[in-house]
Amino acid sequence: MFKNLLVAACLSLLVGCASTTAPSADPWEGLNRGTFAFNETVDKAVFKPIAQGYEAVTPKFARTGVSNVFGNVGDVGNGLNNLLQGKPAAAFSDIGRLVVNSTLGILGLFDVATPMGLEKHNEDFGQTLGKWGVGSGPYLVLPLMGPSTVRDAIGRVPDSRTTSYSRWIEHVPSRNATLGLDIIHIRAELLATSKTLEEATLDKYQFLRDAFLQRRLNQVQDGNVTRAQRDKLEEELEGPATPSTTAPAPPKAPAGK
Image 1 (cartoon, rainbow, N blue to C red):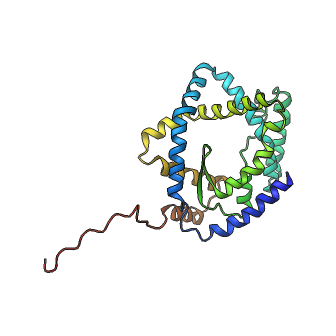
Image 2: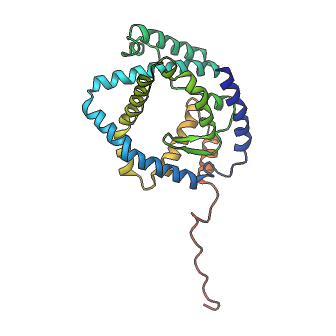
Image 3: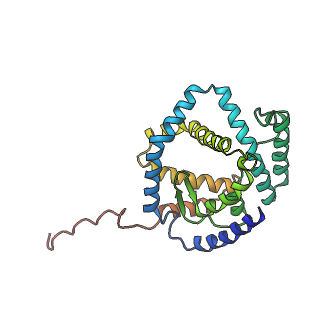
């Protein structure tokens, strides 16, 4: 655990140094668009159809229970990251949620903590690194995982150790089935959003990139984004003009006309 944190922290220092010289938020756009297209192809062929079938045959109350169970496991990481970010009150709420929902909520199947006033948080190590002053680094689309940044990709290392149920499931087939259920359940929850997105946007890649980076900035700052931070992100999203995106200059008129 602490070894992973140390490795992630050292790598994140390199990200922080590199991010100060990045010409834009998305300097690897060509590579990212290729990965995005790959992810879209796999999603349409595999994940989306399975998620639609899962939603069709699984009652809503059952899907809510599945969401609660996975959310209960996530409160382990939420509490730890809130502690690392210097937010003890939020961490206490996360620990309280874990205890209450794991007992009274029958291993997290029912969310009895929220009605009791224990607020749900969503924290990860990428946000913690951001709180520590580490820059996000370039935007990065991960194969099969989707939008990220270099900092958030690094943050997945300790996150995988603190919120992964595989640490408690030794039976390999059961562990794999649980992982599959988690992936399909998350995709099913995004069905309505993805449909709206496909109908409303001309450039889905750019829309998702901008929305992701704006959301992550808001999460790192706990909603207290300054005008300077917002302007800086917008400037980075615009980026420098490139030959692939810059329209050719109009031809000059002949002399004397």
